[in-house]
Image (cartoon, rainbow, N blue to C red):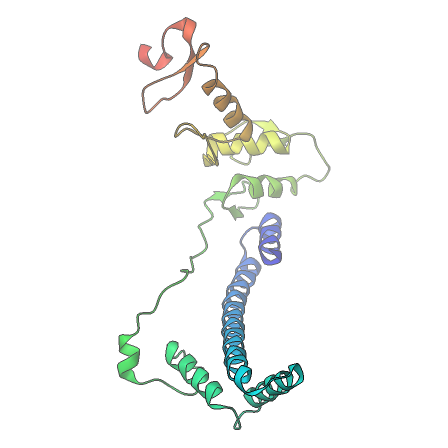
Length: 247
């Protein structure tokens, strides 16, 4: 979560410049290394649990008292961590571990080519390229992926705090505060429909529009939804039809 917040802050301040790209590459490398470490730790814990179960099963028939059982367990744990003097069960577990993973170049003991051919590697998650930045600031020409970071960046070009800011698209004369300007850019320029109705396929630019639309679904005596899949607007029952039918 910390890495995601860092990337979002950098993008909001300066867009996806060279510094953002460098940080993004570092985050990707860190995620890969962290996943390898977690997988190794989980496999190691699993091996230790299996060894303890073997020790407990073998110790149940040889030791009668609680102290005797404790000594046997401690002895086996020390033996499993001592390297060359490991027990047969430990060696067997390590051998099975070596045979269960595809060689990535870091495993010292390589498996045979025949076994490697029989294995089917599974891609857990495919790394995606950074999305393009199609929306540019009309002052400095920095580019952004969506409306929110673009509007935050536009505010930095004003020397003093203002209540209203001009739309960053040169062909538009709209102005408003940060919230209204962000909603305007989403609706008129970037077409970001992030909110979906839970009852129909309609999508909206703001949460307020989504809530207002969903409320009409629960008022069938007042509002009726247009049956045209390209429209799906609500119209008042008293009017008798949708305005798209009159076109």
